[in-house]
Length: 289
Image 1 (cartoon, rainbow, N blue to C red):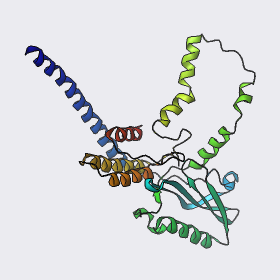
Image 2: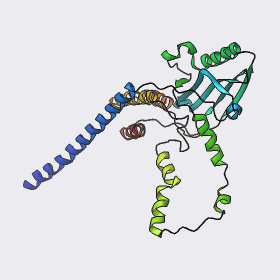
Image 3: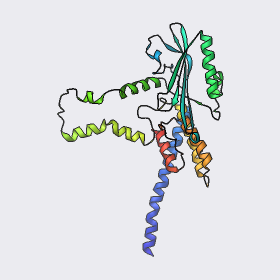
Image 4: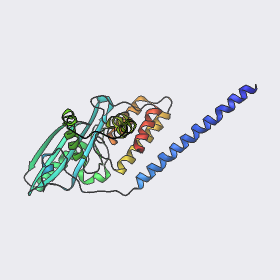
């Protein structure tokens, strides 16, 4: 009998440790969400999408704040797509730049010249309404609509990151490796350690396990407010997972919403359901990074 009591008591510390760890993680989650919600809203000047031909023109700029990044994920239809719209000014002329496609891909694009500023505004606002079923003038009170794109907040410069990533992809690694360089004078153990620290493969593998685009967050660095919305979407998913049994259609809807708010690059694969506590924890950890 004594041995049974000892076995029982030996399990209690483990369960207490797990409970304490869970409470600590929940506190971290709650404090992070609170900090993101109360963070001041930063709105630096918009930059031209790096894949737009005018991005390298010295005097070209985004007109005022006529710049938006839209996203839409629908797991059942295997939709995981973005849409970028910008009103650009260059040498007294106005154009509307659009780029769209699968998240993680360059996609298609169009640069539309406009007869005047008013015509450009009208074209921009029309596209925005068609894609979102929301008015551009009322975007501060944006309401996501079924089957339409959702407005997401990204930090300026996302386009430049895409362009740089494509340029890096185009580099011929064999030619670079054949260039003559001085031999390393470090001992082998130190060389291996430095190689590990700066290993792009190591970081790529770690990020890809969480479906994070290794070149950039798929549509650019998200604002604090956008990340807070991602936390809130996960809270809804957590509540849905607690239901017994969890409703598959509800999990699909909430997973699609999370991927819309926090863009993921799944290539051409169907976005997976977040249907287990482990997957939910992985997404929480991703947002806490």
